[in-house]
Length: 305
Image (cartoon, rainbow, N blue to C red; front, top):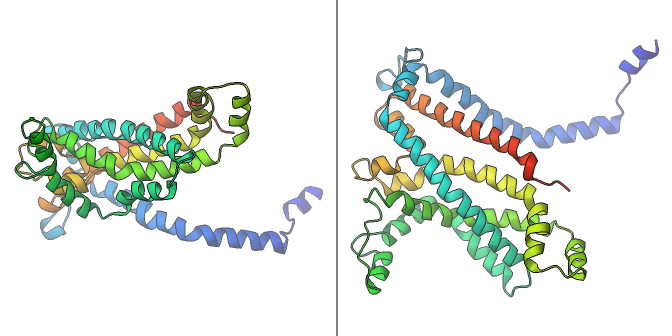
């Protein structure tokens, strides 16, 4: 009888109201995730087993044919290589630069607010506008960068159409446009570190370098882990910069095409949404594997206070 009474215990009105408020506040986010993320994932998975019919109608079920074709498609592996290569260039440099800037702006520096705003501006600027400006900077004939190189006696570089340097040129844009956002997140993490640790280390005669590696890095590691995970996911989904910089007829196309760019071409240019969906599922699988590995490894270096 006692057990039955415990099981049927009434929830107080205050607790019920708290539940309602809590679910009410998170409901828009949950709805957005379901409608914009969860449902499209299953729709894409479903579509990957079909071949698109004429005018987007009459899809034909082909089973695993799209995946078999994808595994034998040389361009897909170019895209995998380029996507991972872009991520390996952009993410480490972005995180390192953002951390150094955050540490500098967290100290005693005049005009910190202005510097924070300046570094964050690229993040709020329209990607199309940013890419057009960089396309002008990289221009082979009258670009600002080549003009500077010529002024110091270095020959012009074909930053966009040269397969050897095109991916590096695009990576520079990626670093420039995302470093401000990562810096702001890391700066917030740095400001959560209690000042007592630094004061105690100063009394013990610790140098700034010692404080950075033994206090700052360990205590900001949770924020650093979050920045690392989100930066990798964002970099793996690179599309707009490559789409606006590199045309399919460019000599550097195979050296820069990403998985999302390849998905766009197959789905909308070549009207094969089934094959494009298979490419997206490959990208999803790669991101999930990397994220799981990161989650496993974070136990060895992330310190939660």
